Length: 283
Ligand SMILES: Cc1cc2nc3c(=O)[nH]c(=O)nc-3n(C[C@H](O)[C@H](O)[C@H](O)COP(=O)(O)O)c2cc1C
Image (cartoon, rainbow, N blue to C red; front, side):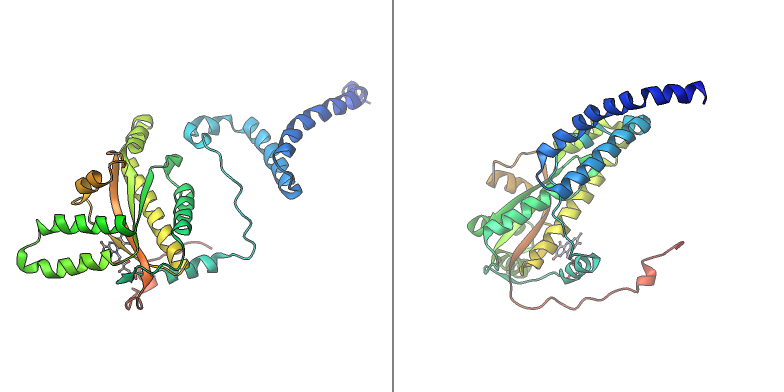
């Protein structure tokens, strides 16, 4: 037996004993956070692998932006019966509907809950969370379309006003509007912090907002509502700020999602051949 293996044999048991309190120190705090045994096991595996990967990848950690570690999140619900077909079906089912009515298939509280969840969980670059929304119901929703009409009246030639007025009345007749904004304080903060990507942050903020718009459009449709997407910004920006003074001046308006009860079917939709839109390389 070599001197090394003799040494290992002598110290084997004290070494193993030393490992026990170390393991307990890692595992016990995790157990206090959850009573769910499956979750407990998942967290053990995660925390042990995290411990090992932090030893192995100090260089990767050094380039990970600090913001990615500044938030906490809840464990997503288990969705064993859901697969990609469910998601695709929901996406296919979303359409543009006009006109809309004031009949909501769900309560305003439920709509708020959906909006909250979407705002919290839709991704953003570096987890910067630049998306902002304002949900308008009832009379507040009508105010938005009144002020839009006011602005347009000063812009549209008098002999063309009637169709414009009718269009705005159609939006006003819906149940509510979600206004989508991006917070310029966040965008500018990210530009200052990560100068290398300064020109990208406004684009990424808009992309994240588009993801939120789509998510909410799909989600409202999934609950039986109809919606259409409008873009009366920037001509209404000033009036919106004057009307709802609580909205910070740094919030830049991007879109308005009008929602309400469906009054008919969506229009026909044509599709360009998929071959024009997609390549696949490799297998
Ligand atoms: C980025 C974007 C901007 C849009 N802007 C408007 C708009 O300003 N007004 C409008 O009535 N519809 C707008 N739409 C709706 C599109 O015209 C509509 O989604 C498209 O014709 C496909 O029809 P569908 O929504 O029924 O699938 C917009 C859609 C997207 C994705």
